[in-house]
Structures are given as C-alpha cells and as structure tokens.
Image (cartoon, rainbow, N blue to C red):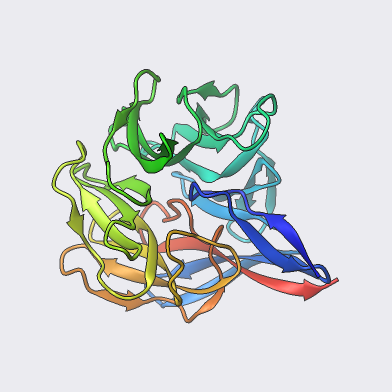
Length: 305
C-alpha cells in the first residue's frame, strides 16, 4: 500500500511522490565546498523540507517546510520562522534579490480552492508581503541584478512558459512560446542572459536566452533530464540537477539524481556528487553563498515508521 505525499512544487506540474505507507521521509541539509569537493552535513530531521537559499549576508540558509520559511544557521541551528504575514502556504520557489533586501515567495492562497501559486515580495527580514503576479499559477525563479524585474514559470492557456514582470506588479510579459515545458528561469549575475530548462528538444535540457526572450541557445545535450541552472556569482559556471533516468517533463521527488557543474563558456559538464535519492526539493532555487565558494542542497531518504 502507498500513500500520496504532496510535494510543494517548483516545477508547475502538481507532483505527487508515492511514499510507502510504512515509510517516512528524512531530509538532510548539506553544504558543498567547491575548493575541497566535499559535502558537509548541516542537519537532518524526520520531516520534509526543501529548497535552501543562502542569505546574501552569508549568515544563514532559508528552507521551506509546511508552507513556512525557516532560517537555519550554517551549523544547523534553528534561527526561527521568517515572518511572512498572511502568506503561510509557501512552496519551494523562493529567493532573495541580488542586494539581499527583498525576498520573493511563491505561495497559494487559502481562499482559493484547489492548487494555486502567486508570487509575493517581502522585506528579507520579514514583514507584510505584497502580491506581484495577478495570475496563477506563477512560480518564482529569478530576479534581475538591478532588482527591477522577476522571471517565473507560469501556466497560461494550458501551456507552461517563462514570463517576466516588474517587481511592483503590472502586466506580465511572455518570454517563451514553445510546445512543452519551459521552467526554472534565472538571470545571470551580469544580467546578460536568462538561463532556463526546456523540453523543446524532446529531452529536458538547459538553455539560455537574452532578457527579452530572443536568441535561445541550448547549453546541455546529453541523454539525462537536466533542470535548474543556478549561476555562480563569478558568472562562469552553474550547478544543475540531473536525473539519471529520463523523467520527460516531470521533476519528481524520490529519484536517483546527481549535482553537476556546467561551464557556461565551453558547455562542458562535470559531476559534483555521486548519485543520491532526491529530486523535487533538492536544489530548486539559487543556493550559492555570496562569494561563490559553496552552495546548499537537500538529500532525502525513507525510514521505516
């Protein structure tokens, strides 16, 4: 027998992971050191949490769990729940502006039946969020270096594409228009490109385009499902999460994955980690530390009840 476990999404497909009834999830938060090539376990808990961001002051990690955002110290200290006012159904699409002053949150609304996701902004230290996107579902993934625009994945007219909108709200601008899923848009630190993953070739691969959506360029070409290019502060490399088996357009929890490093100049890819149990929730959003020497991610395991 299996129970259905709801994984708060970053990819726009509402994903359910099948967890055996006699099992429960353990989440492990890790920090990877680029110089040593080693991962350090920060903490583990018998609950489901996801998607670490690294604060722009370098002092803590931000994760989501049960609709709330939690601050975790770099040695595993619980630093409290971030005040997000009435926004209490956050999913795993959240992150900071480049200047560290603003936090963007994707969250459903309790008054809307069924699944929804709107994008809000709030002071990085917490406060009263302001809604940015008028339409749902919308899933935040990136903000421009100048802080003026956000980019996100959204379903409109039964297709998931990439959109841009002013951080103050207003009319959204569609940047992609291809059959299949376009997801995970993220600005490069120099603002020259938006990186994203797309199924337009028939395999989920990393692409990039100019900020107005023009000149799309494929960056990965192998037979794996590649998602979520997170650009390092040096603008030279990106971490990506790779499924060992083709997942088509899905980004499921509970699969064999590995983290890899993509050279943004040569397009060469190298492994950072061996395969592990992960996927949805592992590294959905930007998680580099400010100087680009480390990044955070999550591994999972199942334990008998």
